[in-house]
Image (cartoon, rainbow, N blue to C red; front, side, top):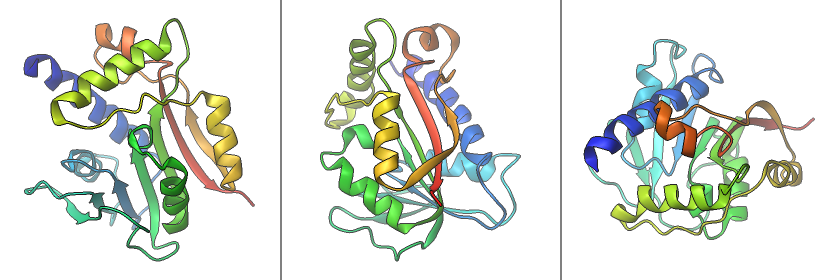
Length: 200
């Protein structure tokens, strides 16, 4: 399993860091909520097109130790940052695990000064719900991460963003997130990326 997981995970980090770096500006203060081991944050900072002066911190319920970026431990309640304290806030494959999704989104929006980036799933295509659910279970079960198997379609995402007063600035509704064969089953239209800004 490890032999399969390694290349899949590396490709995912490569693609996500490409998408995220394209949304950054020099000197941006970035927070990766639900950062896990901090690998994505480190990949952003090491990316050849990362603008100068960008800083990336992570936020996780429990620090794992030896993370390559600074990680703030926070288990519950309002996020420990002031309104608009960060230029960019990232929620990468976090929301579909969150029991109180609305509160987390509201808090992320509160602390975000310019760009809220969301990477998640969307059930589109043949047996989409089943395919995403299997992927979710396989990726998270070894780490005892609870899966809710709750995924939004694009129209549902757009309704959520509108309620929060956000509008998409960049959006990818089909992503080649994994190596080719795995991507054909679990990538493309099952994956969703959006960079949001405050609506005027």
